[in-house]
Image 1 (cartoon, rainbow, N blue to C red):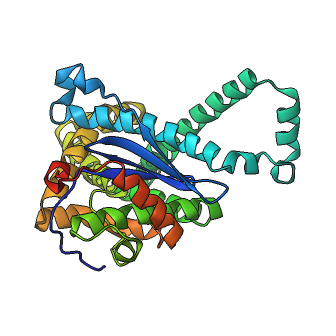
Image 2 (cartoon, one colour):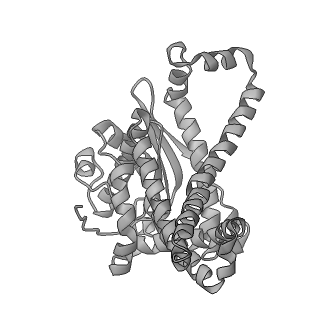
Length: 325
């Protein structure tokens, strides 16, 4: 992986959207989307943080959980808006792309009912994620432990963590094969390369951005892997200290859910730390996430870089020191 000599760090981060990119920085947030006619629509977004009203929610560890929830809500909103603006929804709803079931629902169900179905689908998605990343690793580990006669008792948390990583990697690898997801991953690469261009003190041009690395340590992919690593460490400590908790599957899964906010908080603090430092600890914990970005980011074309530049320029100030981490 090529290394970039960083001249100054920045707090700017973003998210790949459907045919677009959302960036957040010192001046707020902005979303740039490639429109059906080929133009780029850039819109400034209002972002309100609850920690600005309730101060203790901005404390270390706690702010990580709050930021994660806010980012999920805001990011989903931008994703849906980008799908609408780029014409993706119109394409998906066109006659030739709709299944017989889709056509029947579109013709016979009103908007309220469709919103209910969307809500149900979201809940089912959350349940599926829980089953894949929490329930399945626990069940498989318990099965192996039973076969070994309990020899794996003290290593169950570690084995579950490894399985969770494997499931996560396989899942991302499979979805990356989808055409639309691959394009989103290309925009993800454009986002990283643009941030690196700015951090290297180069002029923000398509040519300069194109030369940058697409692997960035402050990426959400790195955050996910850091969370998995931290969850292994914390759950292993709890497992050794309170071995009776791991004997009942339901109780053990409840324990893992209860420590999840702590894992999120610590993961967030590490990502902020990684954005300011480059040492052995940062490189070790960031390595899996940086490797994973080979799947979650793809090399963008110039038109995608143009979109990333528009979004990035909308959230930075004229003084690089104001944009620092």
